[in-house]
Image (cartoon, rainbow, N blue to C red):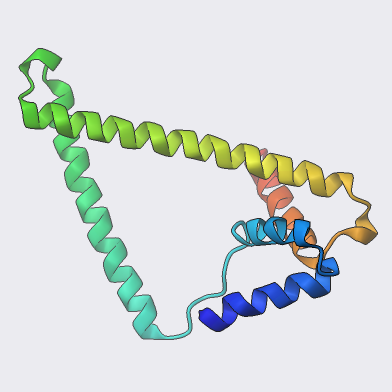
Length: 140
């Protein structure tokens, strides 16, 4: 992974002519483009195991939150109030960040579309194709 990140800087220089202002944009675009599939089965197995554990924890928490929600707020004990507050804060933060990301993505799309097609970098074209096809599928 270390080689990959140092290599990415070289890509930006060749695509953007070394313009420092575009490096952040290129790095940001890469977050929207799906990475390649991990090579080894060991990595896939480890990721599947971690995802399963995470889903089990989330399911357990959802069950606990469901029980807490059924109680009247004044009937909840200190621990339940703490769990509920933490859950709500996390949910709110996640929703806010999701909204923020959607706005960033929209700004990025508008910025690229404002550029003449010939001046768009390879990664911008790839990002635009991915984003617009997703938008198209959503509206079907």
